[in-house]
Amino acid sequence: MTSATLVSLFAGTRWAGDEKVSIDAGEVYYAATSAQKEILSLLNILEVRGGFTLAANQEFSTYPPLAITGVALTGSVTYVTIPGHSFHTGDEGYLYGILGATQANSRWTFTKIDANTVSIPLASVSAYVSGGTAIHILTGAREMLPSGIRKVSDSTGVLYGHLTKQTLAWAEDNRDQFGISPGSVLATGNYGQPTPSTPNNIGTVVFYEIFTDPITIGVLGLPQLEMITEARFYRKHIDGMDDISSAVNPIIPSAYDEVLKTGTLFYIFQYRGEKGAQVEASKWRAMFDAEMMKARKVQGRRKLVQQSDTGFRW
Image 1 (cartoon, rainbow, N blue to C red):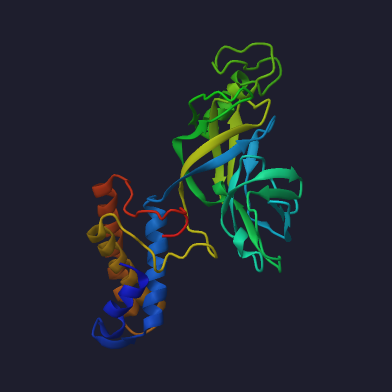
Image 2 (tube, rainbow, N blue to C red; image 1 turned 30 degrees about the horizontal axis):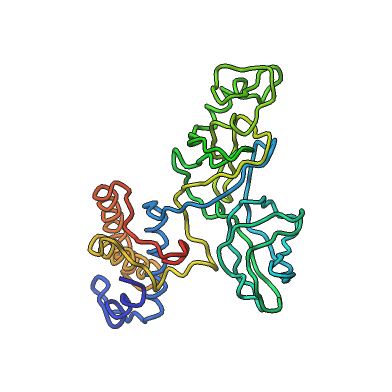
């Protein structure tokens, strides 16, 4: 069930308590889309994975949206100008909202050229006109999974399992075992056994989130070299990029549809100022919360919604 199908279900003349009201299609569409945003966020049902790079000798990584000021083709490689970007080679991200060079509006693995430029593997692109935003794959992260960062490679290209997720408080209590403070460093990845040498990328063994808007990740055991990794996380809706109104594809339609219908009715009445509308909104809010709780219990936080191939269109 999508926003469009809910229009035919709820638009028209309806009763709000003891009052007859007219609900137009635009109200239903807007309310249904708002409900879908809340459902997809609160249930943590959109799981994404993508590459990002832990920078050498850098404890914190943060990923705000960045403005694009140019796109140009040189040979068979497309160069994107993103002043002051924080991307490293191996980072994945999205370019969107670009006018003219619209072929660049997609998901890419970036190669860092310099502090203001990255390249993407795009061999043909139209002339750039204006605009565009670049976001790191982690910009959309709402919550990282406990084993959500995989050690993909170090300087020798060897695989090294996962980085575990810890709390910030735990990290602060255990810094001196991870080579962050003088005289106590980690070389082999076996924390609790410090050695007097500089930690390398094998020694990065835990991560912790600081906040998620935009997400900031801290690591203990600083990489000596850049370390390409893979992240797994639940993601949130990103305005301007996601179209969640028309492409929802629920794995369990009955469960998703019930939550969406009650949420849509809540938002319809919340937005209206007629007599009795707020009473109805309160009633449907309670039902919406009950349906959300039921969905959590039934699925145990498993996905109710199937992602498309791009991972960013529902």
